[in-house]
Image (cartoon, rainbow, N blue to C red; front, side, top):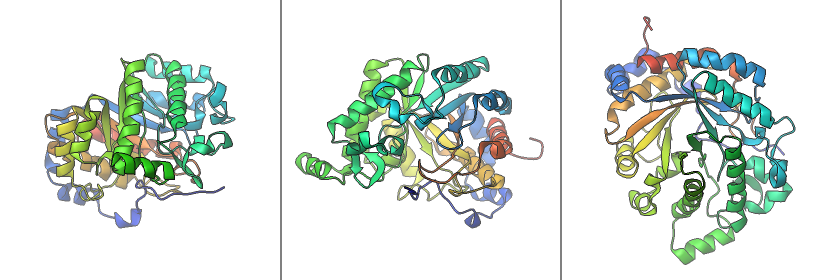
Length: 373
């Protein structure tokens, strides 16, 4: 089964042929980018390891993680998918070449050795292909033909999610953050059970989304009270402030606001950045920034377009001035996507993207880019 979905991550490079200098001139406030970075001074700069495609051997990671630190990284965001060694009832989720428990421990020790924050990511709603492709869990699909999203109205769904969280946390007892994914839930409120539930509760599909996510977040808060949850923000962008406040999600999670384009204006669907920051500042106390150093310009790229990704980071530095002071920027996650989903072709491989990662990290560290940097 070969199944490729269209993702908001994908952008044509041909449409972004502007130079770095042009991008700096056109982004409002770009001349203040360095001052913005210094004023905000985000604490963390996470390098994203997307292990669902071409996962590196531990011997390779042992060589590059010290480089990440040297380039300016302060932590890792590790998206395991089927590379985590799930066991027991979840043993089918682990790939044949999944890391062992010992290797998971070694990876954390590598991060600790270099004084780097370690943030594991577990999928809890969308991008659930690696779970729902198995016959054992097929009945949890929102749409039977497609394994992308689980059905939030099936009572077994949250049971499986909780077991996944528990196994992940058992292998990461010392982490301070847990990323719950929750992005790009393209199949939502489509099954008969969900439609009936919406009618009975007079809910919108976004309320159905919030109900499931709040159940996940409440479980984490009760079972792991010292762990702060993070989630991708895209499913919140068109959710009303009223609903976000009513569900109390601002007390439970920190959104990771992502955009991988070289110009940020007009890229948040129908939501402007001005409105987005206003809403998020009214709901959340803190947030994260999501950029990209690879895997954001096409689902089958071979070569990393460094200028494109540099412009993305320059645009975000310029955007810092527009973030309300009441919303603390916790840090950056420099994402490096390996596949757009579990069935997609490979994006650029990590070794090819190391120079771009170094460039982007140094741009963030210095609050800008010029020849002297």
